[in-house]
Image (cartoon, rainbow, N blue to C red):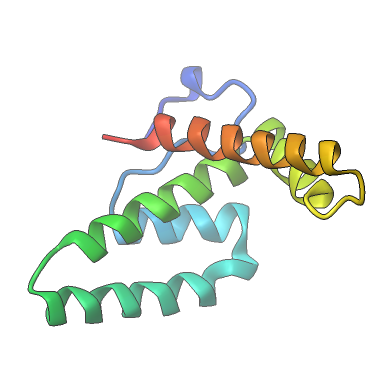
Length: 115
């Protein structure tokens, strides 16, 4: 995990990329998503066995690390929420700009957590 000095405007330190660390972090920043995390973890592990590949597990870890990165950073979370709220705006320019912002937020979070 990050040190206190690195935290800045973060609710919690960035967790390690392990299922336990991710679950603990999610419980702190978005406990309402724990059931979703458990379900998608089960799906990823089932696919890993079927495919004889760790790719589904790696994808699961990165997807949850990204989502936790967004949730633990209030500014990033606010940007995501704002963009999601404008995706279906009647004005196509507003909707297009919202989609760009959504993509930017997801990319920023993924860049922060990618090993």
